[in-house]
Amino acid sequence: MSGAEGTLSQRIRGEIEDLIRSGAWAPGRKVPSELELMGQFGCSRMTVNKAMSALADEGLIVRRRRAGSFVARPRVHSAVLDIPDIQAEIVARGEAYRFDLLDRRRREARAEEAALAGDLLALRGLHVAGDRPFALEDRLISLAAVPEAAGLDFADESPGAWLLHHVPWTEAENRISAVGASGEEARLLALDEGAALLAVERRTWRAGEPVTWVRQLFPGEAYDLVARFGPAR
Amino acid sequence: MSGAEGTLSQRIRGEIEDLIRSGAWAPGRKVPSELELMGQFGCSRMTVNKAMSALADEGLIVRRRRAGSFVARPRVHSAVLDIPDIQAEIVARGEAYRFDLLDRRRREARAEEAALAGDLLALRGLHVAGDRPFALEDRLISLAAVPEAAGLDFADESPGAWLLHHVPWTEAENRISAVGASGEEARLLALDEGAALLAVERRTWRAGEPVTWVRQLFPGEAYDLVARFGPAR
DNA sequence: GAGTGGTCTAGACCACAAT
DNA sequence: TTGTGGTCTAGACCACTCC
Image (cartoon, rainbow over all chains, first blue to last red; front, side, top):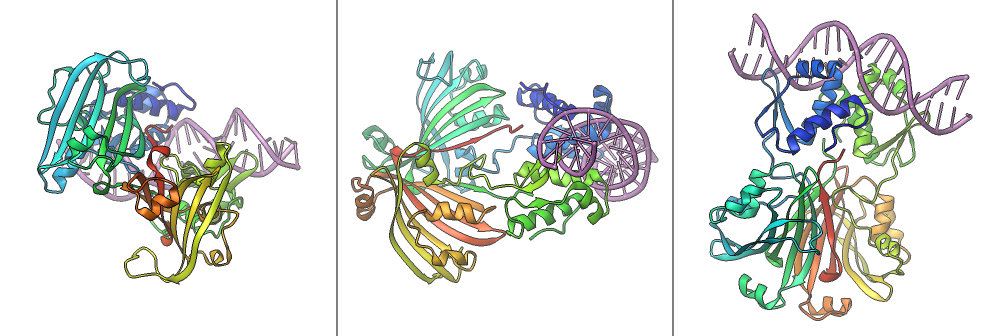
């Protein structure tokens, strides 16, 4: 939470940002107009406008003349490095997608899982494109952050896709490395033991609270992560 | 080049941005004050300020009260995904750094090297940390974009570090994958054939012009790419 | 037609750091 | 001390688009 810093326009921006990131204002909800916010904060329209423009640049709100401003529907595609929605990517290629849940259990966080605490859902599953294994996924979900997850079986929707659609506005840290496949991993991915895998490990927070940890293993030659950056404008 | 769009403040921003990205205004150079720009563009200070604040947010300029605004020294660390300065990383860890140039030749771009054209410098070298191979690098440099590179032997400084310091404000696209080491690659990196390598392939432009292409192979377990994103503020 | 955002103006006061 | 940026105000006109 952070709606109490610095200048007035930063404070306005922070307060609204907190409401959105915490989930209190759901996607699609109307944001007060600049005139209303002028009243609420007792300031000029330029000051409100600065805050709202910043939120729009960030992609947190969408602004339309005459209609007003609204909490944006979260874009899955970050400009710089996707949180890959594997399901959506496979479907977009025209292949059949399936998520095979291999293991599902509830347990307490272990000490070494510093990022997460308390009651967890631990999942292992395989993303399948057509009939070809696409990625092996191990995931922990904090039930403190996402209690609704406790009741799901993730048969129709992968945990990643479900989280993307139900817990918007998260922050994430990715670690990317290459590993040789263990015997078990090789078997599940239909590769030879020792084959090169791209390992993506990601921790995700919402409004400072840990939400999920995931490690995805991709057959290296079959998957490229693309990250582009440069002038936005 | 893009200094001719939209609103007045966008135009101001665009014109200055072009001057910086093209290299015409070198890092450290003083940017005209808001008062001067008000005169040049015949507008109010708020309009100039909006443009300059945006440039500062982008990291292209640094603003200091009383002193003025200056073209920023390029930060090697992008907020989202580094263009890794391998040399700096190794030195920062307190290890000795060495770049062994294995091959260096000039040649014309081939048809399949769509990104680059004309006269190229083609390099192969090994980044060494202490006495341990750290990364194998193949690189092409466009001599049309960077004619100064023709005269360098890259004995003291790796090509990547040299480019980072001499060709600022580039845009880049990274592709990241995992591959098994070929016999030659394994030999140079002192690994077993087939060992998992993290492959980072990057193309870089400056002001729309291709500058360099590079492919770096890291022993997978020894190197992590970290990419973090979320609220800036 | 009227409500909303998009942009701009002319002016103001303040904080800061270089001189 | 003084030039510079940082922020804000109160007002304005315009463009768009929903009603």
